[in-house]
Length: 285
Image (cartoon, rainbow, N blue to C red; front, side, top):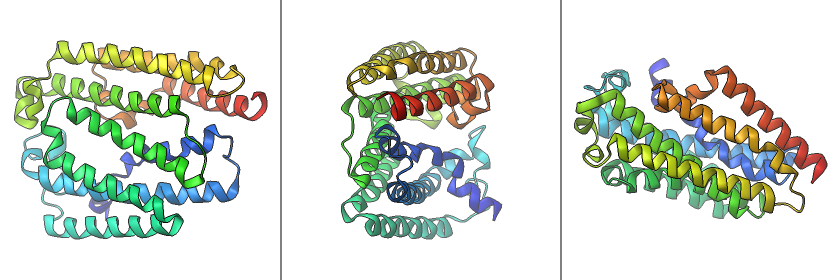
């Protein structure tokens, strides 16, 4: 059972929480019917995420066996067979699709797109430098837009763009962290490291950070009639700069983002950002 849970990668499900952003930023967090729909939408996305993670692990099993961190994955270590994993992947995809269709027929399109897109990423896109990180970021846009469609509210253009650049920032940072970890062996695991160098990735990080912060600032000033959301800008900048510090010291959170919130400062700042955003949306806008 433990290996099965590891295969599903529940620690990666946080990536689907972007589906709640439309609910949160339209001040509908305590609208029970919309909250229930979004929770079920989140469950659907978690299932389809696990479905394509399994396909990825099946595809990468051989190279994972030589990777210093990934060799302990259930399929790579031989604890779960590829055939059983493949059956589970299809089962999760069908369950995700069924749940999504029950919520809203059009919403069912998103699990299909995500499943197909990520399989294409595993077998093709991830081997194309620059395309790989943009496909990863596209996943987050799809989930954020799906959240707005599910509860039938307009999605802020600035917020969607900010989500895209957050995802792009994390994807580029992960490439940088992997490059530092694997060194000269990096190209053995991913062909994109023929193109990605420390200098290129550092420059890309700086560009993406600049656009990300500008986009978020524009969102706080333009998305609502009142600009009080600008009071959350210091929290946003602190979290970005804290992550840049992680990059500078090769912190494991750069390669595995879920470790961000094992850092006390990041956790406190993120909590303050959530609370302040909620209070401003609730009482000042």
